[in-house]
Length: 220
Image 1 (cartoon, rainbow, N blue to C red):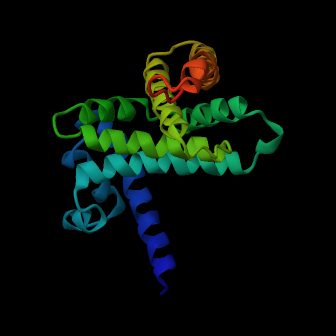
Image 2 (cartoon, rainbow, N blue to C red):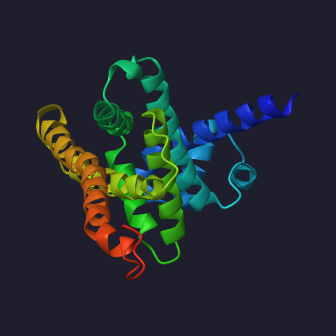
């Protein structure tokens, strides 16, 4: 068995255990009780959980995020993304990710409660960064300067607030959530343009002083 096939098998087992556990999270919360119930459903020995997830509850939280990201990317791979504007690609990616979580709203809610516990801030940050990075990359973003981090921070805020809105949305087909998402994405896509305009204006404003050798101006 090759390393690649072994990794695929391991990921498939993690997916199965996650999917078996999610229904139990609704009743048992995000923790070992739900994981053990999921393992029993699969006919796994309880002790096998630690072989699948070294740090069970935290690793399960990370895998849940990764699972949603992979399902989102799979759906996007079947679409003609180059025919879309970047804004459309990003909006669609966030929407598809939430649609993949449909039916697991309570598990997402319980996970949110778990991630705000003391000691889980870095886990929440890693999960969020991985998701928004995947979205920007599939959207074709090639930024390598400070915009790389700015874009991800801004989209991270959009993903969190849209997810929270989605959890409480009772409108038909989550129409209110998609309208909320459109507004937030419009804001994100506008900020880099404003930053570029501000830098250009600052450069023009300070050029006469730089030409005279007065002060040290970077144009930022």
